[in-house]
Each structure stands twice: as structure tokens, then as C-alpha cells.
Length: 137
Image (cartoon, rainbow, N blue to C red):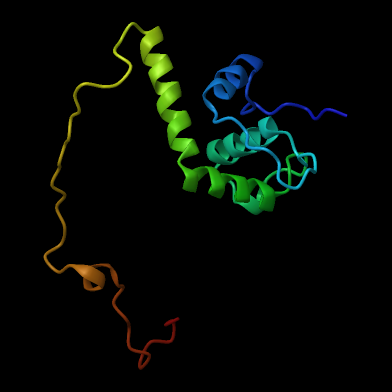
């Protein structure tokens, strides 16, 4: 039985574009079929990214949060997520008639005023003496 789609799920067109830039799957060393389709792993990642929910709070109709987290870590550590992002960014730029990679960058440094006393001194609440104060915490 198919689950109801979430607004964060990949469309068929988005999934095709993502598959085109994903590295080819290595042979399964165990010979066992995959537990969960890769598209569902990516859908779960996009859900977590968009909603900001804790991994453990992923809806139950996604693969278990531990499996999603493990895939995310593997893809992050191998550089897969960065390569996918770069490839998709290049596709978008080309469709807009621009060069695939940016040729310039703007770096902006802005000064932020802070209190004269820095560190925890400036952000720690003053403590009241317990003597003589019936309402102290």
C-alpha cells in the first residue's frame, strides 16, 4: 500500500533529475534486497530538512529514523550530498542561460555592536540576595 504524499516529497521529474546525478549504486555485498527504496530515503531527508523535526520524530510511514540517519551520514561523509547539490545547481543555472558555476562571489563582513563586557558577564542575569527578599527564586 502506497503512503499519502507529503508536500516535501520529490515529484517524478525531480526524482529523475536527482537519479541522474546520483553515483551509480555499488553491488550489494550481502545479496539481500534493499529494505527501503532510495527515493523514500531522500523523501525522508527532504521532510526532515524542510520541517526541522528531530530525526526520531520522522513520521512512521517513512523508513525508520535510524536507517534514514545512517544513509544521511554515509552520503554526507562520502560527499554525495555535496556532489548532488553542485550538479543540480549547475543544471538550474544552465536552464537560466547562465554559466554552470558562479564566476564571482560577494563576501560581506558586518560589524555587530556588543556590550563593553563580553562573554558570560554580559549575558548572565544578576543574582539577587536571598536575604530580605521573600520572592526570590
